[in-house]
Image (cartoon, rainbow, N blue to C red; front, side, top):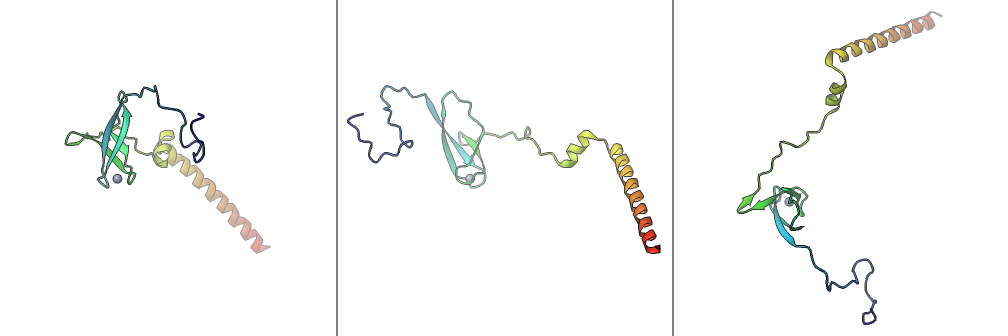
Length: 127
Ligand SMILES: [Zn+2]
């Protein structure tokens, strides 16, 4: 440490630890081709890591597909989750006949209130 000057070194940005004697994990590089901007993103993975078929494009953020030989791997999107709508969630809790019944109940309630409201108005007008 004595032979090195700390001046000008941003702490945190650089490690002062020496790489001497450090055995690096075996790495492998993979290239992903963007489906939108067609640029390549090259990433380094640990040699024993499971390589994902897709990665976020480093240029535009769109989906980039792993290159394999001359082309790219085939991405299976069949397992992708389709976002549920409010209607889908509602149907998970209630059937359509149940919803119709609830709607009828609610309409009857609203009509009764409106009717009562009308009566109040009439009373006020006649008073
Ligand atoms: Zn892109």
